[in-house]
Amino acid sequence: MTRRKTIPDEQVLGTLFELMMKTGPDGLTFARAAKASGLAAATLVQRYGNRERMVEAILMQAWDHLDAETKAADNEEDLTPEGAIKLLLRLMSPDTAERDATDGLLLLREDIRNPRLRERGAAWGGALVSALGRRLSADAPEAELLGSQMAALWQGAYTWWAFDQTVPADRAIRQALEAWLQRR
View 1 (cartoon, rainbow, N blue to C red):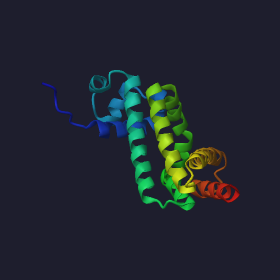
View 2: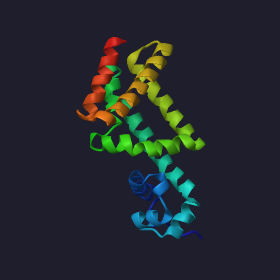
View 3: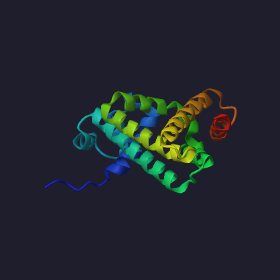
View 4: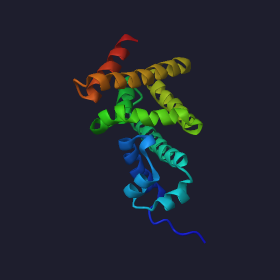
C-alpha cells in the first residue's frame, strides 16, 4: 500500500517554482528542493524520478496556472481591442515584472528545450492568439494574424522594457500595444 502524501504535489511544485526562479533550473538540486519543500530528498526522488522530471513537473504546473489565468481573462474581458490589452496585462504581475522578464528567461529556455514543455507552450500560444484575435477582428484569417502580431508585440515590448525600466512595465507595454492598435 502506498503512503499518503503529507504535502500535495501542487504545493510542493509551487514552492519549487519559486525556488527555481531564484536558482535557475540548473541550480535546482534535490538537496535545495528538499530544504525548500520540507520533504526529504529521497521523497522527491520517489515522486519525480530525477531532476529533469522534477523540473518538467514544476514547469507543467506553471503552464497549468497560465492556462487557467488566460482562460479566466478570456472569459471576463470585453471582445474589443481594449479587452485584448487588458487580457495581456492581466497575465503579467506588476509586482514581479522585472523578475519574470529576467529570471523567467531561464525557465523559458527549459520550455523550449523540452519537447513536452515546448508543445505545451505552443498550445498556450495558440489559445492566446485566438483570444486576442477574437477581440481584434471578426474575420478569422485576419483575427489569427492580428492576434499573433499582438502576442509577439506584447512579448517584445516586455523584453525591451526589461532593458529600460524607466516607466512601470504595465504602462510601457500598454503604450506599445495602444500605439500598434492605432497604426494597424
